[in-house]
Length: 94
Image (tube, rainbow, N blue to C red):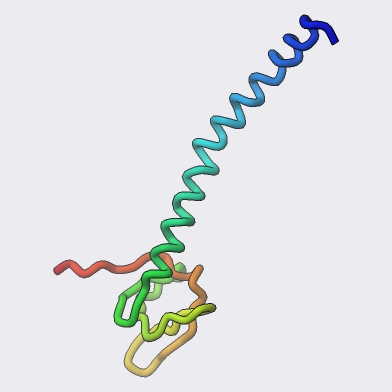
């Protein structure tokens, strides 16, 4: 390979590198940040916290455990919920 062929090859790869960089900063990096934030939120749940599930149910945390979270839907119903099903935590307006 001589210098002209190397330069031509580099010039043909440059647009692909630019597209990958744009894709990384617009798609991959924000998803990683959001996943990290969700994981931290789920890890910080404690008894008495109110959450909204991905199905739209509002529930109160009874007992966070390693593989699932026990939540209370009403006074009589306690169910197990996988941590990925917690959409968000309801913050008190106080």
